[in-house]
Image (cartoon, rainbow, N blue to C red; front, side):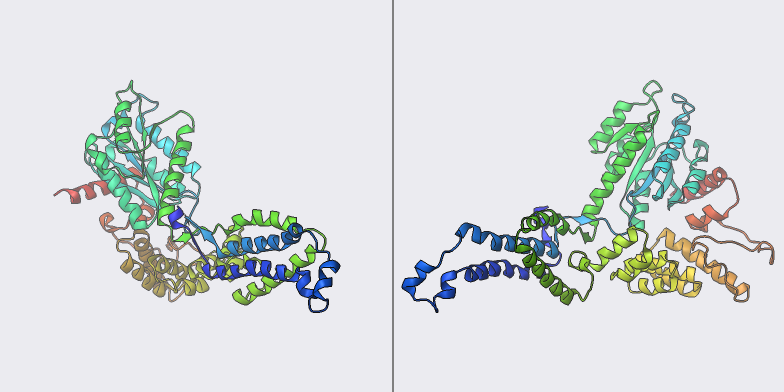
Length: 492
């Protein structure tokens, strides 16, 4: 922590020449003998001048110097740790890996282990409203059920359909599930946690358990679950472990683990430093309180006016907040209070400004702002804004650029396919675009005018988001078919 201490705006430290200058000037002004020595003879000067107590005389100048020093240090922006990226949810991404090996059908807990696990998933989703969650099913092989999304209803509809019968291969391969989960978060570029819901972990999987894994045991010792062995395996890997409870204690435990992992990852991976300058407001306020004495209010007001003029010259701003907060920080405050229109005018960072414009419904301006961000996220968000603006051709180009920078990005691939369909629909309808208020990952087909178009859907060739939203079969049958196809491809 100490090794990472630095100032965000170090040039402000040059102003620290003022405090010693204030003390020096005060000592010159308060020296009565130097002021009168040119007018009064030296042998009379000592008898005519009565100087105040030197201790009391020095206090105001030193106090003013302390106020200036604290103010300058605060404006310079001391920092020693990173903060999470902007607009990231307070609860991080969570990938739930559900064990669907045959032993999960045991009924030592009512109604069964797998049914209790599915109920617990519902409780976890309810406690994580608005947070991104994914679900993986595994037994002898591991398969993606739902990719990272904040659509709780979608997750519930597919997690409720989980059953041991849909798995193509018996057994238990926890390592494969963890590998799939970490790969999913790595491709998404998010920091998150892998929650393993299982009645046991094979000893061979210990080496594959990463630091962001937490384990929630399902079952009882009376039912044959080796809870002690499960705990020993988790402890050997340095991972937290708990068991299902009848109340929400286990859900709250999962929430704490997710927040802890997210904070640790954000502290090490974030690219923005936390500005701790505002901490100096407290000692600065105390120092100002001591200046409220006769004759000093005017002096302090003059000092503040001088600092304000200097700050306005440096920042070219008219708001007093510019002394303490950057435009991005002011924009973030406005954004968090729901004033996205004001936030869009304040943000200097093009990514933040683009997000604010997007939330304000100014999609063309948002796309222009995102165009300045040459990262996969910037290209992806530009594509989303262009879809809302009805410019599907440019949206396709933006999604392709995002995929060139981050190969295999599921959300970008899904939205690319959707933008292509919207473009084709627009062309088929003689240039009449669909409703631009629709979400970029939603497609509504015309079932009246043109009666739709028939065609075959190859499940294996569909991206995860597309087949989840567009194939009208039961979730359990769909997953069974999909898992069988994936398992066949995995077979050497």
